[in-house]
Amino acid sequence: MAKKDKSEVAEQQKEEQQQKEKKQYKKKKEREELEIPKGIDPWKPLELKREEVGKRVLYDESSFATLFPKYREKYLQEIWKLVENLLHEHGIECKLDLLEGSMTVTTTKKCWDPVAILKARDLIKLLSRSVPFEHAQKVLNDDYNCDIIKIGGFVRNKERFVKRRQRLVGPDGSTLKAIELLTKCYVLVQGNTVSSIGPWNGLVQVRKIVEDCLKNIHPIYNIKELMIKRELEKDETLKNESWDRYLPQFKKTNQNKKKKTQRKKKDRDAAPFAPPQLPRKEDLAMESGEYFASEEKKRRKMQADREAKHAESEQKRKDERQKSQIAPTEKDRSTTTTTTTTTNNNSIQDTLSNIKNNLKNNKRKEAPTNNADDFILKKKK
Image (cartoon, rainbow, N blue to C red; front, side, top):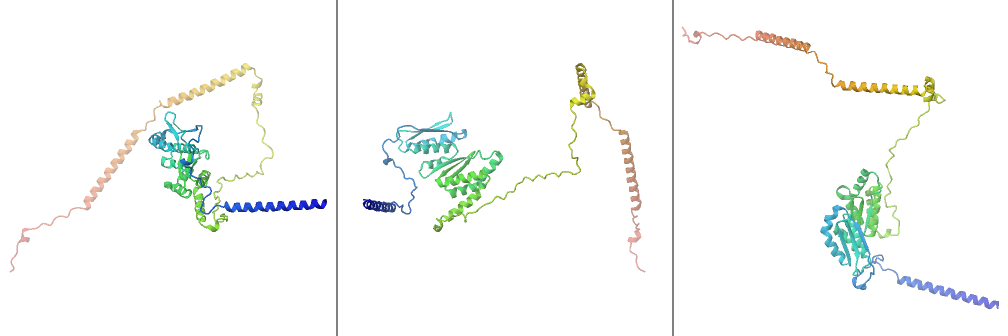
C-alpha cells in the first residue's frame, strides 16, 4: 500500500509540473501577441467621435463657476459669442454674469463627451487669468492640458518677488520664449499666477522651472539642462543609459554675507568680583530722613517740587516767546563810512599822480619849423 501511495504522489507531481509548463508557454505566447509595434504610442489618448457614443450619456447636470477681475470684463464681452459657439458643439452651456463678475459652465442633454465639462472648466479658468481666447481654446483638444501655478506664497518680500517673477520673462521676453520652445507649451505670467497650456511632459517641466525660479534658482540652469536632454534623446544608443554624467551639476557660489562675531577677550586686570549693588529708592529715602516723615510732610514736599518745576517750565516758555521780540544788534556805520571814504580818497590821489608822471615822461616832440626858402630851387653859379 505504501508503494502504491508513493507512486500516486509522484504521478500527481509530474502532472502538476506539466500543467505549469503549459501555462508558462501560453503566457509567453500571449506576451508575444500583445507586444506593441514600433512607431505606436500606447499612452496616446484615443479620439472620441460623436457617432461612437449613444444618444444620451449624462443623466445629471454638473456645473462649474469662476470669478474674473474687473479689467477682463470688456474683453470677455467681446469674445463671449465665440466661447458660446465653441462649447455648443460639445453640448455645454455657458453664462457670463457681469453683476457678480462670474462665468458658469453647465452640461446639457446634448452633451456626448463626459470629459468636455472638465475641459470647459479649464477654459473659463484660463480666460479669467488673462489668457487670450486663441490659446485658451486649445485646452478642448485631447492632446493639450493646462496648469495654473500659484506663485504668490513663495516669497514674502514684495520687491524680491517682483524681481524673481521678472526673471521668468527675461529681457524682451527672451527666457519665456526659450521655455516655450523647449517645453512646447504656451506660458503666461500674470499677477500671482503662471498659466501654461501644452502636453503633460511640458507642463511638469514648466512647473519645475517656475518653482525653482521663485526659490532663487535662475531659469537659465533648467533651460541648459533641457537643451542637453533634447540632444541626448536623438541618440538611440543612450536610451537605456543614465544621463547624469552628461547633465551639468551647478553648485552654489554665494557666500554668507554675515560676518562672524568676534568674542571679546576677558581683561586680566578687571576686577574679579561684580560691582556693588546700587541703592534702592527706599534706602535713599531712609538716608535723607524722608522715609520716617509723616504723610502730610511728604505731600507738601511733593507739591513744592511740582510748583518749582512748573515755574521753571513757564520761565523757559516766556524766554522763548521774548526771543522773537528782541531787536537784533545794529552795526556801527560811522566807522565803516570813514574807512571807505579814506580809502576812496587815497585811491583817487594815486591815480592823479600816475597820470601826471605819464604826461611828463611822454611829452610830444615839437614839430620842426619849415621856411619858404627850403622849397625854392636855387640856381647854381
